Structures are given as C-alpha cells and as structure tokens.
Amino acid sequence: MLNNKKTFYFFCWFMLSYASAVPANEYKPFHPPGKFINLGMHVMYIDCFGDKSPTVLIDVGIADSSANWHKLAKSLSKDVRTCIYDRAGYGWSDPGPGTRTTAQIVHELNMLLEFAEVPGPYVLVGHSFGGFTARYFAATHPNKIVGAVLVDSSHPDQIYRLSELDNIKNKPPLKITRRELAPASMTDFEKRWYALNSSRKAVFAQMNELKYFKQSAYEVKHSGPMSDIPLAILTRGKTQLPVINGVSLESAWRDMQKDLLKLSKNSWQSVIKDSGHNIYKDAPEEVISNILKVVNLSR
Image: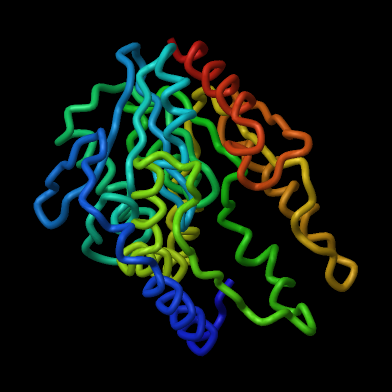
C-alpha cells in the first residue's frame, strides 16, 4: 500500500509519464460492440451477451478493463446472460464524479444496470479489487443478487495483514514500463482497449482507486455478509508474495481467502493450481465452471 503522500505522488508521476507515451495512432475512432449509457454526470460502457437468466455481471481489478474478460464472457453466454462493463475512467467509460470508493462504484453500477435495462437477478463475479464491488453490492442490494464468485479477491484486512511489504529492504526502483504498439496478434477491439487503458483517464482512475483503497476496505468490511447465496472463492495456487522477517505474506493471503468463506453458509473454495493472481487468464475453464456452478445453484 501507498502509506504516505510522497510515495503516492511519486507513483502518480510515474503513471502519468507512462500514460503520455501511448502512440497516437492507437486512438483511431472505433465503435465497440456494447452500449454507452448516460448516467447524468458521465457515460459508462456495458456489453451483454446471451439471454438466459440470471445475469452474470463481471467486475475487474484495478488497472484492468472489461475487454480482458471479453472472450470468457462470450463463452459463458452460451449458458447464461453475461455482462461486462468498464468502471468510471477505464476502457470506454468516462471519468466519474466523486471519490472512487467501492460505495460510489456500486452506486454507479446499480444506476448503470437500471438505465441500461439489464434484467436481474444477478450473479456477481469480482476479480481482485472487483471483489469489493461484488461484496458491497450483494450486502447492500440483497434482493437483486442470487450468487457470487470471488476470483482471488481483495480482502478488507489486507492493508494491515500485508503491511510487512512496506518493510522490504533494498526494494528495486519502481518501474512502469511504457506500452508500445499493441501486439499484432490482437484484434482491432483488443488494440483499442490496449490504448484506452494506457490513457490519462485510466491512469487517474487507477490512482484514485488506490488513493481511496483504505476507505473502500472500511466500507466493505462494515457492509455485512452476503446472506446465504451460492458463493465460490477462487484462490491462486502460485506463491506471489514473499516471506519477510519470518512472516509468509502468501500464507496471510491464503488465510484471508479462506476467511471469505464466512460470507455465506453456501460457500466453497477452489485453489487453482499453477495459477497466479489473474486466474481468468491462467485457468479460464476453472472460472467458467465455478460461475456456472453458482448459476445452476441459483436457478
């Protein structure tokens, strides 16, 4: 976590430098396949596939975009209606008003679903920071939610339990690699996303979500349980956090993942072997099968 203003603004400077380096030819006009919904103060992007109830709604991690989940969502849509969207500032969505906390994000998402006339009930899928969205939405709108899947989700206590990260000695300098031209193997859709998520508005969205992460964690922690809806907890199998001063931070992460089981009496955990944090990339079939398990239990 970013504990002081000096560190935070240093990080921001790097991110802005990174954003300004995106080649201009990546910004050519392009019309994505979804819908642009005007919420009054800003416009947000949403794309839905399929027509079988309930509706699976996917929210992503910090610095991510709906396009990264596009292929997985299309695969799911054969069995269930699936929607991906861009949080304010990311992808094709405008920057949003107010502080970028989970409460504000869920407020905007609820408006987006209403204005876009996306039918419920919903199964929420939250990856990383998007897990906060799933938890808070389920706790504050229980009549709209029939299931959830948390994919290596953030935990409200991680800002304390992973605080040893700040004690690492001889840290390597922070480097944010400039995104050059998108790989030739990408589709036009993916290339435009690649550029959009390198834009200044996306960088500011990242910075603001990081800036208010502690407040988001507080909101989620005090929002309450998810009732007893079907809840799948997917946890990475690879070790990605170090041991510091004899403390295994990866063990702390796994303990917090296990703690998420308490959110519902109808929950289970799957540790995905050989997968890192981005389970949806490393093992998409495992994500799909767990989502469909939740969907079938909710019907």
